[in-house]
Length: 304
Image (cartoon, rainbow, N blue to C red; front, side):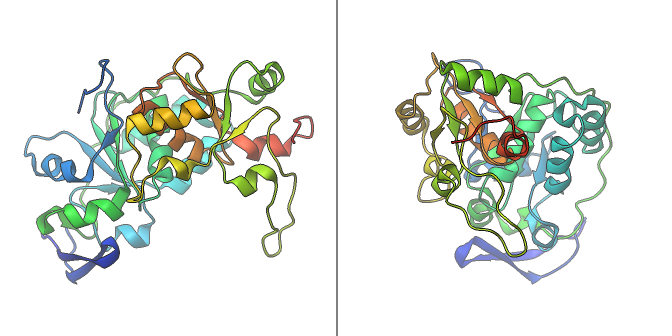
């Protein structure tokens, strides 16, 4: 397999110099697996000759093609996002069995995912894989922006990494999802923290119409608290420490004793918040994955 010779330059953008097409941690107070892997640790995984880890690149195709981690296969997050939100969504276990099997992944395959750096695309894929029953899934902290500068040139390639043998995997039914009707009941009861991780403007309804598209219903679910997801990131674009995140969640009413329900606009940021919560040791959070996209579309769902 030919490898590309690449150079990481300012802004953590990988520039192809000579382009040739190329071919689990268990730390914490409990036995749960880590949900993150630091960029500096990825190289060792890629270099391990006996590694069974599948690496997924959740960036756009135009970014993946010129430069990606050696052996990483591209994950079409747009297709996964659409599939997770139509029809039976994440409850379509037959469909998810096929998608995940095609990536060469089964229940026991270690998986590492990275995106461009925002971490919401990678977190969405993490959440879907975990809900489908994949046990060891980790997101690269800070994404490609943080990963590229620390990879040796030999661990970066261009083009197709090669074929992957499909596995035989049967996805399980999700168990961390909250439905619209369940959220209605929780909103009325006011007994459990519900965190809306959209921006403050989205939360308050201070949004402008896009060109050619009118603004529909705006605002938030009654009884929710706004915790914009970017508050969970540090100045490097990485998730804050578990201690900082626990403090942040607690300040918004969410603790181990009072697990939060998380929501956003279309599921990605809520998945990211679930990743952050689990990194912080808050393992009982649930997600209204269909989020405000579904809520706004139903006139019977109240907004403030």
